[in-house]
Each structure stands twice: as structure tokens, then as C-alpha cells.
Image (cartoon, rainbow, N blue to C red):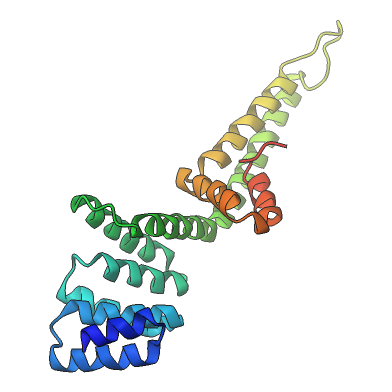
Length: 217
């Protein structure tokens, strides 16, 4: 039944393939690959609940299944459980590396891993940016108050300028660099890769790159 299911899968007869793998599972429920194969059919159908169910069953039987971790990661990513998805994708890549396999899945896994990391970063970035902005305003106010109390807020009587403008500029650079450092490197790489591979979406990606200061204007 597995061979028949594989043939149906290659012909995109997903319903028939699912039936074949289900029969195979009924006969030999302890074979992880049957669960993975059925999960792949659900993956093609974007039936994420069943993808998660079958991949978890497969991994319970064989935790070294690269496709099992990949499928579970994809299902978790669809549920916006990005941090958990990252762990599954990283596990899949580690298994590929340890097996010295040149599997073509590696590129696919790397891309969804970067996407999961970006979405996880984006999910928590709003709160971090708000805190960063609040801290920046507090520092700017403290600096202004210091120069006000010191009488150095404006030009000196002899016409020479004080350190206040330079200190404001330096403070701005510090916070700008902090925001850039908060963007994971592989997130930047993903955005650049998507820009190259998906030209039709270049206008949207260009805006994203500019916001993240990854693409100079």
C-alpha cells in the first residue's frame, strides 16, 4: 500500500494517497514513514491540523525524521507558534548536517527557519521598540535638563557652540544602532533573498528593507 500511495502522491491524487497510507498505518502503526507520508499529503492540502497530528505521531516513533520535524515546524508556523517552529526547523537542519546529506530540503528548511525567526522577532519587536523609544526620550530629556541646569543649552557668550548638539547626535546614533542590532542577521538575509527570488513582490519588500534600514536610499 505504501508503494501505491507513493504513486498516487506523485500523480497528485492526494485523496487516494491518503487512503493508501491510512491502510498502511492500520496494518503497521509503528512505522514512522507512513505517518510522514500521510502528513505530506495533508501538507499539500494545507490541512495543518492533520499535518501536526501525523508529524507528531511520526516523531514519537522516530525523532530523527527530518521530514517529520519539517512538517511539524510548518504546522506550528501556521498556528503562529513561531518560537516552537524555529526549534523544529533547527532540529531538521541539525539532522541533515549530522547525516552529511546534501538533501535539497536544506534550502527549503533554511528559508522557513528564517521566516519563522523573522515572524517571532516581529511579534515581540513592537513592545521592544516602544521601550526603546521611551528610554530614548528619557535620555534626551535628561541630557537637555543637564545642559539647562549647567547653562550650556545655548551658544556661549563668545559665540562658540557647546557640546549639547554633538551629544544629541551621538545619543541618536546609539539608539539607531541598537535598533539595527535587534534585527537578527538571518532575518536580513531572508529579506534580501526574497527580494532576489520574487521580483514581483519587490515593491513590498523594498518598503520592508527601508524600514529595517537594510537597503540604503
